[in-house]
Amino acid sequence: MYNYQKLFLLFVLSFSILSNAQSYKKDILRGEFTYLLKAKFDTRKDHRDEELFLLQVGENRAFFASAVSLKGDSVMANSKTTTKNSDGSTTFGWKNGAMIPKTNFNFTIIQSNENIQYFDFAGMSLLTYKEQIIKNWKLVDEGKIINTIHCKKAEVTFKGRNWIAWYSPEIPFPYGPMKFSGLPGLIIKITDDKGDFDFEIVKAVSDSKLKGKFVNVKKNRYTEAVETTQPKLKQAQRNSSGVLESYGITTTLEGKEILRQREKEREKLIDENKKYANPLELEN
Image 1 (cartoon, rainbow, N blue to C red):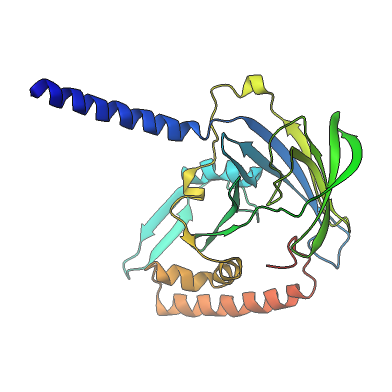
Image 2: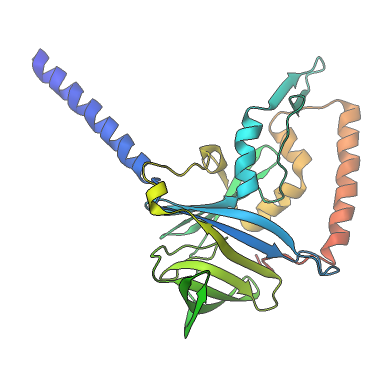
């Protein structure tokens, strides 16, 4: 009887290890591509902001996030400080001398064959919403070489903008920057018809350098998130002080008044900037 129990336990342990290994295998790195975004976010200016984004392709899904934001994860993980104050409040900060990379693009997008899932923080809370994969692509019989890559053309209307994409069937990943996926090949370049937003691959890591590597996006960017909708996520980000209080983070009466005043000033600034804002997505 003892031998059977021992054999059964050994089988369960082996199955558990195998299952964990298989789930971990899903995020073996199969491709890594860096996109440069050139974006006009303010209609008052001709200036284009620039940001590098990383697309890491796993076995069954791809992760898209700002390269600066991803770099900041490791830096900030070792630089955070938390101080409990005598009045019961909590102060968050950084170690002296810590160089914290700053970016306005702290979101993470996971693309799969099933859906597109967007993750971002509102205060201390990680929120997420899902959207369907773009299915209304129009494939155009036109070719172009971009950075030595043979590409084909596709067009789509998405969230209020018309987009022109160049994808490569030679790179059989149905992914691309932001929420753009669903084409029969990796998107190499995509631009809206007004030229306000442009994503283009500027770096690709060769297969030989990816062997044995895994997707290195930290799990706290996309696990244990509260599911919501895109409008509610944006509203929660505007009401960050309320989010903090919902997590039991308290402040003094004076501190609360400062937060309220800052919130009023921020809302005023948001309302003013809305007049000239030029977001990538014009519709929710």
